Image (cartoon, rainbow over all chains, first blue to last red; front, side, top):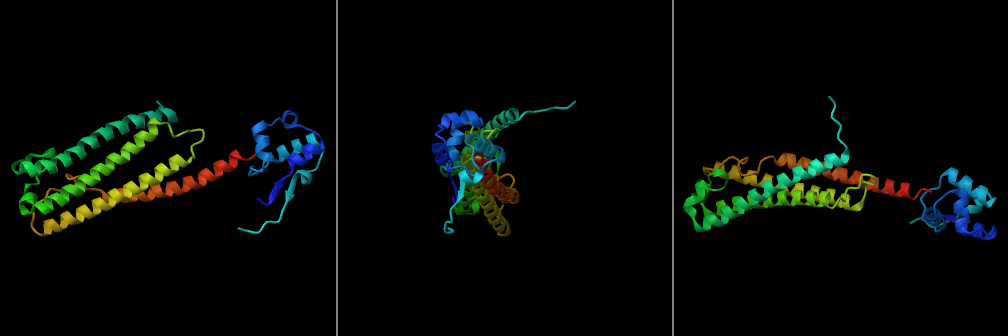
Length: 71
Length: 183
């Protein structure tokens, strides 16, 4: 997918573990794992808001567009 | 008085009804197949065979005609048995999960049921046309309803409807997967 999730990069920058983030944003570990590994098809604004609040960052720090040739 | 039935109850009722229909169809298919074998051994009993359907006129006109009609009847009967076997199998294994109804197994089942209905419809149609041709030749043949070859249009209609439902299911699976992967 052309949208890359840089959640792991931001977590590393904030030195936050997946468990800690899971508790702060009230998401299950499996859902966070889906988001982190880039398997997610969509992200709710409310989830994005909670992650940005927990990691003290902007949506652009988590999501990135990478130009990929069309299949 | 309003009667409310929950989906599991409806499914249980359908399962029960499917078993009854399946048993009846098994008996019918068995009857047709045994008829064909019995005709070889005891040709004089043809007029008193399955459901008292008199195929003696057909048998006397030519053994080939008799066996072609019996073969088509048997194929249609066996396909109907297969159709209900698949329905029972899926209802028994509880493949239909109401909380997540869109899954590949059900989609596969719907397409399979559609193809089986199409084959039954085509065999009924060709059987009906063959019997029409035999009647035009002056051979005495019972009505196609008694031979289990009636209603080809209904079978074809069902095949088309099931195919469309299968296509809708395909999209449903995509939407469900997308929904599951929305965080």
